[in-house]
Length: 114
Image 1: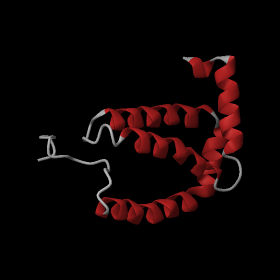
Image 2: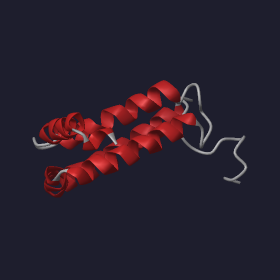
Image 3: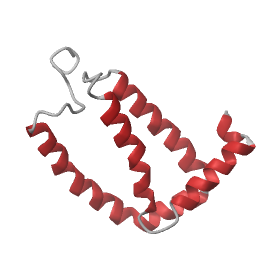
Image 4: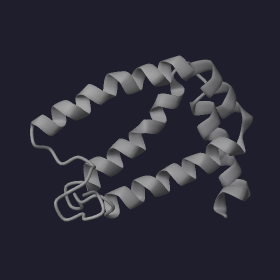
């Protein structure tokens, strides 16, 4: 895998340094938001490509977070800030749904959710 090579290790080191400042881990949310903003309008159904690419990003995040101890230290240090950001973001998702914006979730085409 590319992340095990020299260039990948440099990338992991760069990402770990990016997450070092207090709250720096919140920057890793940006790619997930971009994925949803770009793909969700074209693939609105649950389990479609927007969800697949988001899940793939979480798998890559999991590998990267496990690859360097600095991530674990930053998570232990900022856990309260990270959970508070979730509490703040949840109402924003609800407000977006009220405006009719496409959000992840079961659609009328998905029979597994019924």
